[in-house]
Length: 159
Image 1 (tube, rainbow, N blue to C red):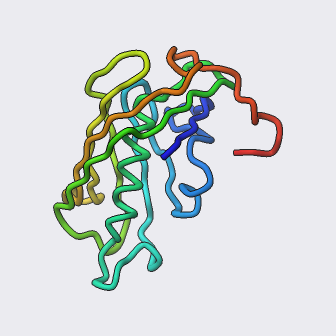
Image 2 (image 1 turned 180 degrees about the vertical axis):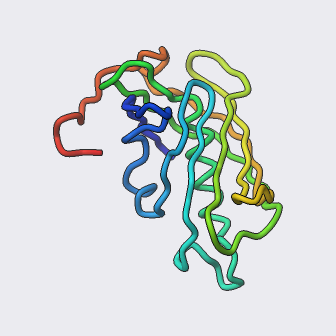
């Protein structure tokens, strides 16, 4: 899976543009983003549920993938971007989520300039644990430093 991350942030550290395409299709939003940490939120809708009425495991895995990856891709320079890809992702489903809002929290645990490891969890707003995960990620060329690189898609109407 490939991830692109914009450096634009509001005063509460939430980026204006961090997720696009598939993430927008699911309805995910980044609510916190800083060096080493990202929080992705999803308001549960009927299309997120499986036949048992719980949030589908694929949705939960996607949320963890996004939060864990973004935790290592924060960019400190407005207008620049850092890109990465998932090398591995392990997800364990702990409890059901059926309604309301859930949040995936990702934290970088170690690594170097290119490859980093993150772990995280998904909880509902009442604090109930829904899933946990860990993964290994690789920053693409030009994304190794926190300053990132100029976004080649900026100004072309892309998010």
